[in-house]
Amino acid sequence: MADFVRDVMTAGVVAVRPDASLVEAAQLMRAQDIGDVLVADGQRVVGVLTDRDIAVRAVAEGVDPLTVSADSVCTHDPVMVAPQDPVPAAVALMRQHAVRRLPVVENGLPVGMLSLGDLAEAQDPDSTLADISRAAPAG
Image (cartoon, rainbow, N blue to C red; front, side):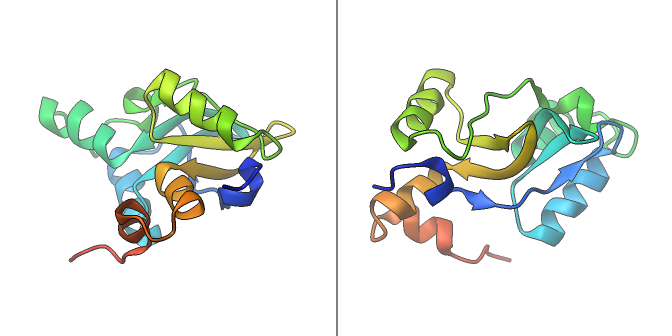
């Protein structure tokens, strides 16, 4: 397995403003072919918004995704890691906080995302999870 988060993370960040609508966030996820975006106020990460958050915390509650903000549905103050953090420490944080992804922040600025899929590809490229993580989405 790779030694540091920087060796396995997905570089680059896709973010929305806290006041962005859920429709705007979902359209960005679709365009970027991703399942999550950072919610950022300027360069400061204030939360993580996932496609599941939109479905469970908004659509299932019957709220209007055109009028509800990303900030009102996202997970605030997410656990974050740095590129130089050891991978085992990041894995321990994922377990401890029961999360599937961690924003990667360097000098206060978001630089990437670390997901379970990233870890699977690094640890065992032939695993089913790694295969799923590399596959193009259906539909």
